[in-house]
Image 1 (cartoon, rainbow, N blue to C red):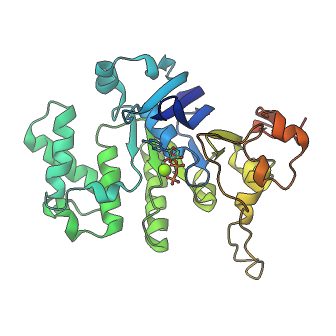
Image 2: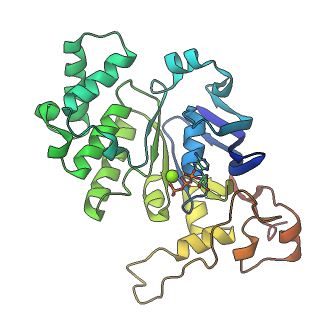
Image 3: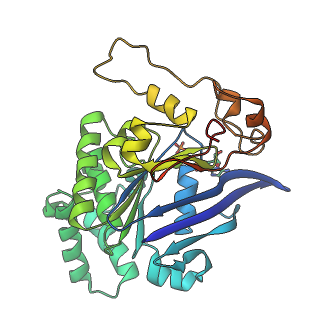
Length: 318
Ligand SMILES: Nc1ncnc2c1ncn2[C@@H]1O[C@H](COP(=O)(O)OP(=O)(O)OP(=O)(O)O)[C@@H](O)[C@H]1O
Ligand SMILES: [Mg+2]
């Protein structure tokens, strides 16, 4: 087991004693060379989970509990110096949501990559540029593009540059937070293919975050479905996607268009995602769940085994 996240809790403090419960008791594992997809609606806490693992948190974030074990070492308990020296970007790296727009448009691509490398490693400028060229060709961009400005690149190419930067220090784990959301469908497919190829070529473990369950389906060995700060279903991708057990997962799958059933009306999930300051009692999905029972309002369901390595947090399974 490369990465083990156990009962992780991170809340944002938004007022005196008022907290947004963005990550509320999340556990999962990531094996070597495995791809885990994390899926859920906007605001359910996916990015919050990612930045808690890497400990790149805004000042109002409070990590209130849990462990993030990387090869058995709890990185939540490492001091900032060791975290920076040994873990962040070196072992676990991340492509941020919307990051392709974070490139400085008026600094050449090569300068930005080389600068990022020199910030972390004692290498000469020349070696950093050579590495920048290697990284560009790794992500399928002509190395001569080191002297291009980001505004001269397409959105898909800029996203590839961000992926190259995330891989600069040879990490073992790559967290990709909505890596293709801002791209058109064709470029989205190409970018996902690239990520998949890089994963197997570099033997990466991948944590792929998306609100789009069809993206996750294509890319993942395992799937975790998040709802309101919690994982509500977790297991092998084939199990979770073909035999979903949690009503929320079923609803997410129904909202995906299918070529074979083009005439079927697309379902959408009625109701609104809950407020994470005061989430609903019991099961947080109960106000939107077609199967809600009395117990669902009263008691929070724990993740229980509903198949082989397949867990769901739902009172329908007792
Ligand atoms: N710095 C912050 N301070 C307070 N609340 C925050 C902060 N950042 C995020 N939140 C809240 O935390 C919750 C989880 O947000 P998060 O960005 O993790 O969701 P997400 O699943 O990544 O959504 P999306 O699919 O839109 O990217 C949301 O309710 C959001 O409004
Ligand atoms: Mg997000």
